[in-house]
Length: 419
Image (cartoon, rainbow, N blue to C red):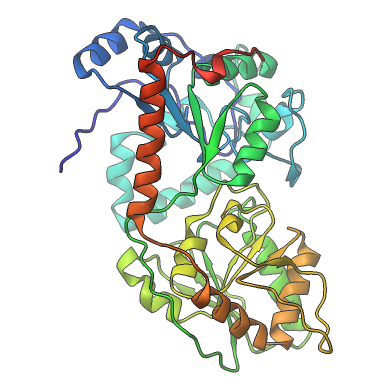
């Protein structure tokens, strides 16, 4: 079955994790009649939105006028946080009124730079390895030279951004959502703490490439940690690097950190660099590591790599800020290990998100490798259906419930209360 794909010409800027500085560019109005014409021609019975990035509010206005129910999946925090990661000075942001957003958005990219990086030309450039390397070097130099970006902006852009108004703008968009699909208990908690009027339900996400390939594993002398993804602060990459370096210096020399990324290779003695990979290579990759580490310091809404690892029987170490903890039955947050009374860590190792917490659990596992075997056994024995069809069926039931509610003339749950 082929699915038609449509692109919005001239969308609003798609924000990066650096945040938003030019409020006007992200709230620019457009003629909603073009959306209305498109929707009347297509005649959808439901709209499923995965992010508000780039989307005009006028689109939702026209959807609401036509009485089409809207489902929103919480893949990120854009709309309740201008940087989409809910972090402030390295900690979970508690600023629900957006009073201190300016400090987090000081290095926000300009509209012209965002347009360039999200253009068709840039997408073509990214396919050329040599040009990519050159672009990254130039890009890094530009970033290093922008120590005080406010001084290089126009007078209009240097005006203090009105984040309270931006918050209300996105809240008005969320108010037009009929139902929220929270992809984890964690994302539900975060969204409900910022938008008290919303209603929804939790369905953990998956993808069609995941299948049940669990098997018992054998652990050798080296403790092989695996890290997949970008080298970003909010992903906890540098925290993991610091912890591994500290453990290695303290004598844990049978420690290997396997990095899977197209980023330039690291040179630490304990690091094993690997290029990026395709899904069909996951079997080989998961055979080469003992445990996957997801050290996020932002409240990661889910983390599909955790589900992928578990589907191969690979134990995981994740911070408490990782939504995928929903799929790990029988776990306990790690405090200590007593040989006389060993703890049952279940199918995963979850720590408090701090540098000290990660170091404690890695040292515990390094000294007591039997914990990995115990976790592997728990994963192999746990009652979990990895079938993607199950997820699809759950989503279809949610679709049908929303369509039925609209057909019965019931008001959208999220339109009953104001911010």
